Amino acid sequence: MVEAECGTLAVAENRAEPNGRRISLRVARIPAINRRKAPDPLFLLAGGPGGSATDMYASAAPAFERIHRDRDIVLVDQRGTGQSNPLNCELDDDLMLSASDAVLAAETKRCLDALGKRANVAFYTTSIAVKDLDQVRAALGYELINLYGASYGTRVAQHYLRRYPQHTRAVILDGVVPPQLALGPSLALDAEKALLSILARCAHETLCHGRFGNPVDTYQALRSALAAQSVPVNLADPTTGEGQHIEFSALHLATVLRLAIYTPDQAALLPLALDVAQKSGDYLPLASQFLMMSHAYEDMLAYGMHNTVVCTEDVPFYPPAERIDRAQLESTFIGAAQLDALRSLCAVWPRGPIDADFHKPLQTEVPVLLLSGGNDPVTPPVYAEQARQGLKHSLHVVLPDLGHGQIVAPCVDGVLARFLASGSLDKLDVSCTKRVRPMPFFTTLAGPPP
Image 1 (cartoon, rainbow, N blue to C red):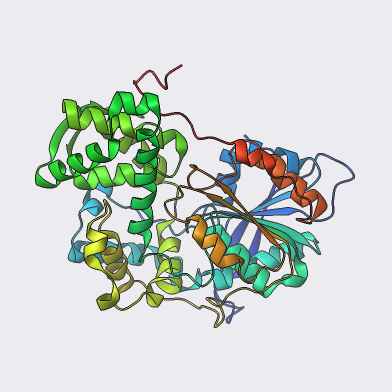
Image 2: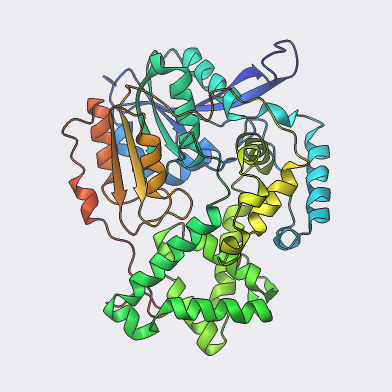
């Protein structure tokens, strides 16, 4: 539980029609502990797209405590997320796992029909959201603000900075999406590269290699086996205790791999889970991971808002289908299915407003600190380097072998606090990040070796 000052701010859903439908933005402020606090707060911007800033802070509050001593922290659930007229769609995960184009189109239309009773989903894009954000800033009486954006939140932070540089003091980008990039075409390739790097690290560690040999070989053999035939698994749901039956397939494996490589603690389980499945025929650890991670993520995103952002800001900017190497995508555990699904979904979902300069490189004098995980499967370090090209005062910190999002990594909280305290990257001490290591690999279900 986090104590905060909470309220709402009413804004026009369609800013071109100020007398039309109004929606309420959920706003929370966690006042600084210090009575002589700094005048410029930290605004947190969640990932997704579709994540809630208030939910994100509730799960990561300790990482911001050093900053909270001297600065207010402000949380705005972006329109369409959290408690800001959320565009939530109920999805059948098992159905969507292998949905045909027809099923996907039908589910998309069903979601649109349900949301259409209280929202015009087109008006939930980043270009509109940054105007909301600045309206909140003004309403709370702040002249200057600092921004922390995670994943998709880095896109929001950069676009706010583009629109309102005069109100932006400093920016932290964690898991960077460069403005020039339309996310999607390379997601499967980036995820495969991250997975192979994680498994190769195990193969080069004496204890992990001694227990599992080369996990890359195990992974490839398991993929081939599941592509040929699924495996029935009966288990108790690890979150509810209820009995479950899963026909564990290559699609289930892809879900486990895609979500596990986001964080070092889940990645630490992969060599063991892959090994017992392939060599012993025991799929219980993989099936348990599938259920745990599916439950953790199913309520995390507002998929309607996610769809509006992706179908406005990403998919229309993809290369033509004939320029995409499908054979290369199909060589990965995700394959081309995710890309095909996005194209099918966006053929039905409405597009919203997008600023003409949205995908242009950002040029700014404002200091920007960029954070990347060396094994980030979604926003690899090369993306941050692409974003840096127009950032005249920037520093890029890469934490080797870590995944997506560095805010909870050891010592990062101190780095961010020092950066915001000075508002400058000059002489910023980031040396502690060079000593950060991921969780050791599990060699048994009891945990890592002593």
